[in-house]
Length: 101
Image (cartoon, rainbow, N blue to C red):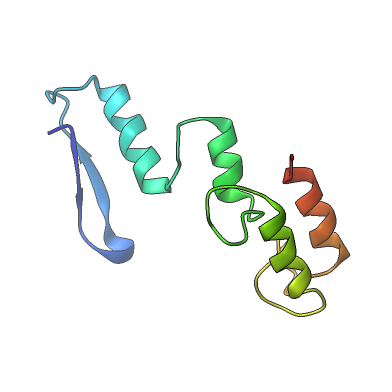
């Protein structure tokens, strides 16, 4: 075993076995990728995961996400990409920076 997660909720930690079957840097990368919910250990995967533009969390930023964003336009909730508690033009503009057909 290269790593294990100990604890629950906010009191969790990842312990690594430096004598495990993987080099330590590879074990850390794999566990962090899993912990952060990244599809891959790439800038693109991090952008997708943390941008908020994947409104329906299906792993892609597409027209379905835009439809959800537009459905909530003028309200708070799903699609508030900039965190100002309202889906508005600023969120549409931000979505446009992440959407690539």
